[in-house]
Image (tube, rainbow, N blue to C red; front, top):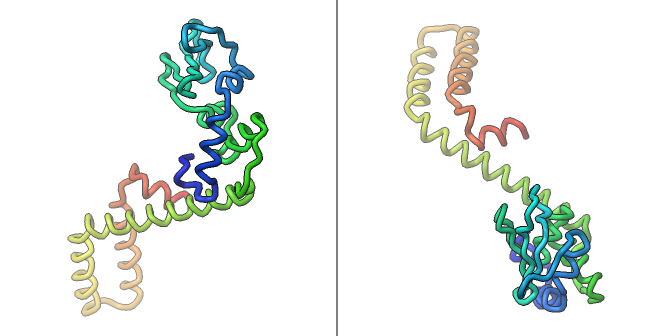
Amino acid sequence: MARSSNAMLPAQQIDAVKAQTNIVRVIAERVSLRKSGASFVGLCPFHDEHTPSFHVTPGTGRAHCFGCQWDGDVFAYLQAAEKLSFPEAVRKVAALTGIALDNLPAPEAERLREENQLERRRAEAYCHAERKLLLELADELDWLRKLHRKADECITAGQKQELAWASLEFVAHQLPRTDAAYVIVAHS
């Protein structure tokens, strides 16, 4: 999770935690590393390999795998290796380095924020799909309106209801089944 989306995490504290953390020590808890020049090398924890291609460089505070191209700092490593959120990764690193943190959101607050963000994305996808359908099906909708005006003139109420359902089925069959917005809306 990007730092910019976590307004409650003070950037100065995050930078202080990162600056005071020995990335080699954190990664060496899970990965066997050996010194190789200015960096440390080991087997990548993110893919199956037999030749070490995972490089940890303490000078830059970053790790990079030349096999799977994974790259990140100590927080990204913990997020990937332990399936932590960004705030959880910051908390864990702070605990390892003995730094007290202020104003970090509780895990429950973070979970609720993520759920709200997901709900907003679903709503945006629905609105986008609706606008897209209205634009793509403008001619069909116009044809249906004309058809309904003619139907009003010459058929009974029961027949109108059947025609309305048939029209809805026609529009529903025009929906692209592979459209991501359709999948999100249909399975919400």
